[in-house]
Amino acid sequence: MWKTFFPILQWLPNYKLSYLKLDFISGLNLLACVIEFVKFMHIEIRYCL
Image 1 (tube, rainbow, N blue to C red):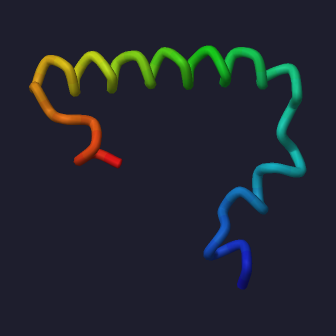
Image 2 (tube, helix red, strand yellow):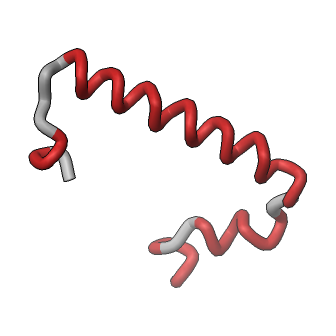
C-alpha cells in the first residue's frame, strides 16, 4: 500500500548511483528553464512559492 502513495519506494532500491550526477545536472537545467520562464512572464517569485 505504501508503494501506491510513494512511488519512490519502488524504484529507489534499484537506483544506480552512477545516474546521480546526470540527474543533478538535469535538475539544474530544469531549474534554470523555470527561472527564465518566470522572468519572461514577469511573474513575481513570491507568488510562485
